[in-house]
Amino acid sequence: KVGWYNAVLQPAFHLPYPDDTLAFVVLSTPSMFDKALKPFVNKKWLKIIRDPVDQCVSHHLSHVKEKFPEQKVDVIFDYEILPSRKPKFLAQTAAHVAGAAFYYQRKDVKHDPWGKKKIYGVCIHPKYGGWFAIRGLLLFPDIQVPFLEQSAPVDCVNTEEKRIELLEQFNFHWQDGRYRDIIEVKEKYSEEQKAYFATPPAERLRLLGLTQ
Image (cartoon, rainbow, N blue to C red; front, side, top):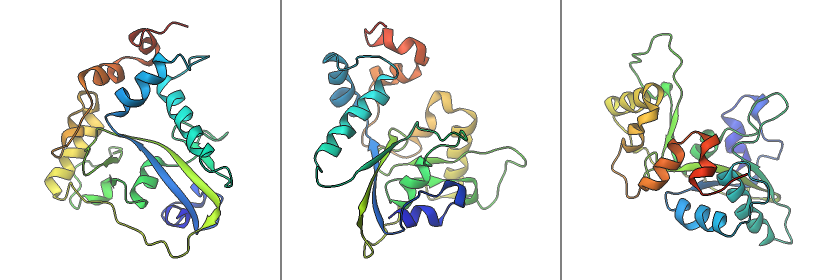
């Protein structure tokens, strides 16, 4: 429910919907690369190429909207920002309140070793660890669900030591991706997918065999 999200954030970040409004957080799993992105690129659906992943997600979520012709469906993508430069929604907070992935933050560590350093939080999925992404939010403004019960996300990094290790790796060594394997995962990115996301955005089109 939108109310779960708004309840944990300052008013500046609230979504402008009634508290009981139904919302879905959209995640992409490791198989997205082979099952969605590569077919999308191969079918030459990209007329003007910006970011192939963002365009692929947009393409598939537009199909989801078509499945509900009687309903109003609002879509917010993870990369969208407001004129104030704030994100349109805080993806990791949304994933946490929806029970999709646990958002580990500095406040989840009792004995904080970082002093005055800025420490960013990170979501970990119980099945995919850090090998997933939060892609968007689907909102159904005309569907109110007052009786929907909230499910807590799975706390899969549940020791102080592991949480410190996770936040250290994410904040100071994120490039090597070790934080993604903080738990044993059932599926992770393929070597091809790792290479794609490790490539600077400007060079990714060439990697996919695309040219402007």
